[in-house]
Length: 337
Image (cartoon, rainbow, N blue to C red; front, side, top):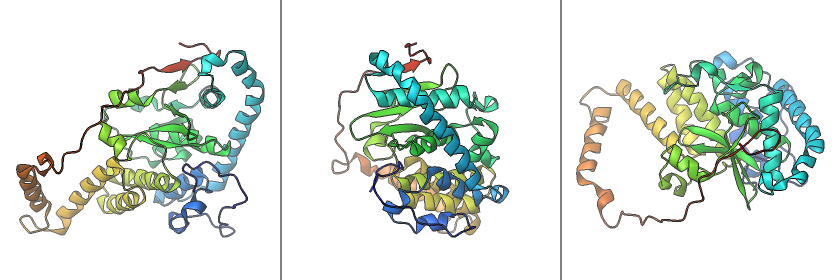
């Protein structure tokens, strides 16, 4: 099975969709891991988006053709641009793959002109009442996006170039992550301008986002997602839209499905529990067993007993040496900033 949603080499073909019918999330759920690895991440993303009534009109095929055109432009540009790498490979970690990622970021930033939504840039809390702010149709149509769809665009283009890229979670934030089994590179898709190429080591995200080591150890954060987990993230984005529009009866099933697909996600666990609590208030009367106040009483008792402090529950923390916290930022001349 392919670990990331890059196309596996070989003769396998993706399942054929019914002519004249676009794949749904239900269709994708029926695929094996091997089959799902052959599905375009863009198609997964928009399959989840189309099930939101206001986005039911989306033509996935049209967006796929646009992404194909952009990826082909990147491929053609690299033929000439790679000479720059060979002229000064030390400027790019002596890694041609790192250079190619830089060119992709340059293309998205300078050629396509994609930017983070200016009206959301400095907000501490965003309500995604417009679902297009979360899905690829939004950033492809308007050239303005968020961490959800900007990182997904880098993944969709990298998949077309047959690169081992996927989304990676940093708490509720998303980045594009390259991982060929030997080396990893994180791409911060939301920092635009000046060539658009910003690559941080894992240690940066641990510090900047106050991400505890457990978030990495448990399999939630800072690793490339499998295709099935990626589908879970996209379904979770739909749940986020429903949550932000106070439709918890729709948000909870999406979050539950997203957790089924990506059970190690800490963020999905948190938002699903909150949505379930909201729905619980409509299912039970106050004071009745099963009402969220009953759950709160149980949690208070758990906290009083503090089982996580018992020796049998305490996990030994490891103090592995962390890589130096350096950020590689380049303009397109290849010079380090």
